[in-house]
Image (cartoon, protein in one colour):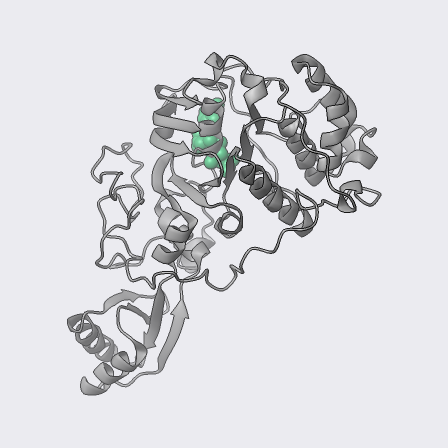
Length: 427
Ligand SMILES: Nc1ncnc2c1ncn2[C@@H]1O[C@H](COP(=O)(O)OP(=O)(O)OP(=O)(O)O)[C@@H](O)[C@H]1O
């Protein structure tokens, strides 16, 4: 198990991570979600002993990484796929890691097969695509057959087939009882990969809950209602009537109203009774990605000026209707609201930051919204059979050999407190 307790990291005036507490349990994939710059990599680096916390601590199996008796044997990580000596071949790179940790050379070929790089193993890694580099990084993480695995944006640069393969690999590793902690900024991907979610924004915990809970808490049905644009008093009349009847009303950027808590026929009847004409009355379901974006929208560092026009700049006025904070949200039970925030960093309108949760109108057991299909069935290969580069994958046609017993893996190379190499890869 991985545990963070009050984890805080400041770089000068910049607070990258603030008071983060969570646990990552074995046997499930835990997704670590947050917008760019929200502190995911910094948190992972602190867990791996590559950065020292300003305060708080992180442990793996009850001890800080650097105090684990055989840390390299227990923990594997993919932090930066580009942290490879480009002049070396994939095999040489893995061999040098294996030799450092006393891992038998045959294990190198096993992991090369697992990630589908066996046919390019002799090629220099500086000729690798981003996706091939990710696979090589994953191979390095698996080298020691560790019980605890951390992956920072592992699907970055992978094509759809590669993404599916990573998804199945993560699930397979977790089903073997390992602790699997995977960061991403894509909710849609994590909803298909992870069973548990830890969501952060500007270094602070926003949600800590199962994917099931997140889906049921965020896949709210709602109605869109529009009155004649030319008669604003009709809109006001309707807002009052719906509000009195117990509906939650949120103005949409285009002038429509988003209504939760009332079925469509009731909205129609109330509009009729109030003598309000409707131009639109339509059913909708909030997508998970939308819920995630709304949850983190006050906690995004980098934003296009076009976002304002797209309605992503600010929560619309009045968008935070009534309702309890669902369990597991930061600020909900187990995450008391009103904890001191980072000065100037408390995300506006974020559930659990002392504000009511805007997603309280739930259909329990709701399924992911459009764009979130159910997970694809696993492929024949135990790790989803990646296509190898240049030849059919041998594991695609035969049962894979079992992983060898735990063997050490080289510790992450960067010394503590070095500036984080900030990835400039396309995301
Ligand atoms: N060594 C450093 N010195 C100064 N600031 C840093 C350093 N490392 C990270 N930061 C800052 O801390 C914040 C969190 O960065 P971090 O890389 O942990 O976020 P992230 O969620 O992993 O982002 P991304 O998804 O873009 O990789 C950012 O504002 C970043 O610029």
